[in-house]
Figure 1 (tube, rainbow, N blue to C red):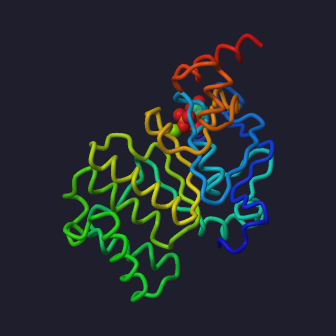
Figure 2 (figure 1 turned 45 degrees about the horizontal axis):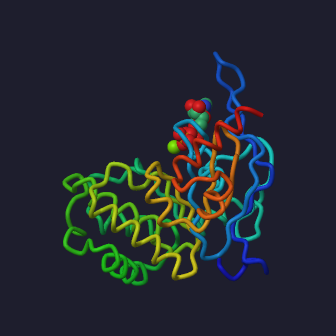
Amino acid sequence: MSNIVNENNVVISLENVSKVFYDLKKGPLTVLDNVSFSCKKGEIVGIVGPNGAGKTTLLRIISSLISPTSGIVKVNGLDNSKYGEENKKNIGFLSSDTSIYERLTGKEFLLFFAELYGMEKDFALKRIDELSEILDFKKIENRVCKNLSTGEKQKISIARAMINDPNILILDEATNGLDILARKHILWLVKNAKEKGKTVLYSAHAMDEIEKLSDKIIFLFNGKLISNGSTEELKKQFNCDDLTQCFLNNIEQYEKK
Ligand SMILES: Nc1ncnc2c1ncn2[C@@H]1O[C@H](COP(=O)(O)OP(=O)(O)O)[C@@H](O)[C@H]1O
Ligand SMILES: [Mg+2]
């Protein structure tokens, strides 16, 4: 819960986190290599990196969906290796391919998850009402998910990730494949979460989104954190005005080393 955030307001911290996958044919594959950074309360942190950079693996490790091979991850000051299940309750995780139960209505689906979180039904219904207001899905909440559009389904998925009001939101390429309106809605939601003091970790390929939203940006390349700073800091560091170009300059410098 947010009351266990430590004095520096650090909500997520990673210390030398590495992940090695073992492939039967290719052998060990280091997907994350000594990644360290932290995120504070009310901060939006954008993660940028090409396909295969390790973004999803990183976000899944923070969310206690998989464990790191080495290193320490703390959420609200509690070590994932010990308090993973507890920490999961404080994280809403959303990706572009989060599946929803097609045969349930949106409302039934959300109630199902609320129950998993141990929420009382009356309380859950109130929360769903609140979310349907924020996310504007009142009109569709009683329709079977199977018949919803991609954007509508994504709204229900976002509501699912937020049902228990976690203090951390993790969005892994959550705006992929969405239309302009649905995208705008998610961006608004991220800003709104920040205003409420939540921490948002956000991966996306759309640099304009990252630039507009993030207080801090992390460049990830081949499993390594190659830069970490605000937009202004990165622009200064790489001496250019375009964030995409900053990333390219960063890779070039990194590969020369
Ligand atoms: N369960 C797994 N087993 C083996 N390799 C994996 C597994 N999950 C991811 N990888 C590999 O790890 C690398 C990073 O993947 P991922 O974290 O999904 O990157 P990104 O989200 O940045 O595209 C890729 O090379 C991917 O193939
Ligand atoms: Mg990914």
